[in-house]
Image (tube, rainbow, N blue to C red; front, top):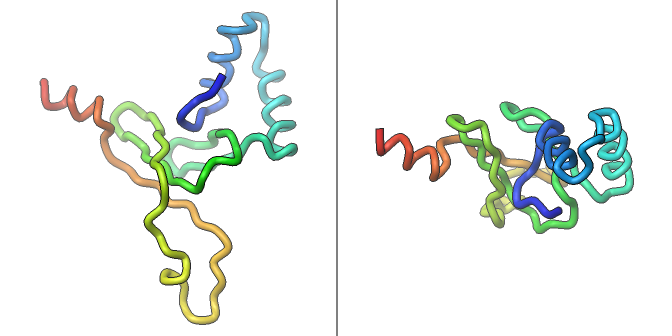
Length: 113
């Protein structure tokens, strides 16, 4: 089951129940913890959307949060050059950028109303 965007625990539980109806939240938490420890999943802490998880090993990318439908989408690639954002003497080891706004589907809905 591959997912193109990061998922919250509730979303993972919902998808898991579609495959294994008897699965419970504790089992999902336990397995997510194990998959993060093994490096198979990445934990993302978004300022508005909360904690989410996505498959590791993807190319570096950022995320877009839709304020209207509360969805999070992956944005491909990165336009930030780490060498140009840090002050002299600083070493950038990593970064995470979150974009906010209204997704395409919500924008279309707003235009129809």
